[in-house]
Amino acid sequence: MISIIIITKNEAHNIQSCLDSVAWADEIIVVDSGSEDGTQDICRTTNNCRLIETDWPGFGEQKNRALALATHEWVLSIDADERIGDSLKAEIFSAMEQSHYDGFEIPRRSQYCGRFIDHSGWTPDYVLRLFKREKAVFSNDKVHERIILNGKTGRLLNPMLHYSYENLEQVLRKVDQYSTLGAEQLYARGKRCGLGTALYKSFWAFIRTYLLRRGFLDGKQGVMLAISNAEATYYKYAKLALMSEKAQ
Image 1: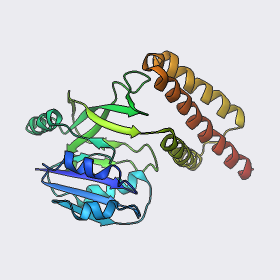
Image 2: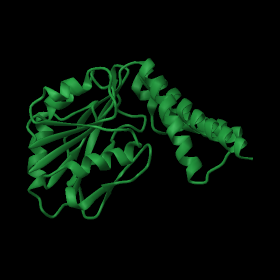
Image 3: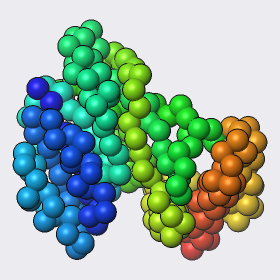
Image 4: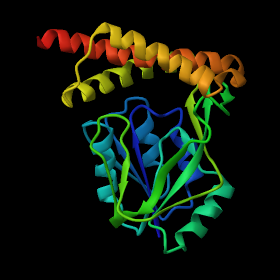
């Protein structure tokens, strides 16, 4: 009835808990792009888990590869740092019986450096993850890919838990990775900018997160999150500015 699809690379610290939270599924497909930390071994020894090893083309294309391997009517796409609790599991089974919807958005409750964030633009965070296999495809974006659904979308009530950033070291690694991918994606779309754009957009990212989206109510993690959002924005556009300069 339902296939779970997950893409991974070096997620040994996450993948077992993720797989355990969806052990009830009819099939679990993990597409891994060269893990060296034991992720693949964990997947191989988990019941009902099919491991596919491949290269890394970007988030969107990788998820489309995983989707192409799914065999059941419904698909749930999750990341290794996400968990499906019992209440959400029951709601998913109930939702799949509602044939007038082709996909469902799931609210996501995310953790940042030891605290679940209730504001800062992270809550409510509805993400389209449950859908009929033949009705959807992922955009081919290298980062921040999205599901393109040909049909009607509903919403679930119970949240999916997202253990996104355990510490600041992980934040910094993702800021570097995502800012590079984001800059490359903007450049490929014909976007160009200077350093002033990077400064302006990073300042605005902090104001939006901390003030407009009430990040100040999330305590010290709210301050840290606003700063890391500003940093991620700055580096994305600073990298784009350097690309733009080289192209002249």
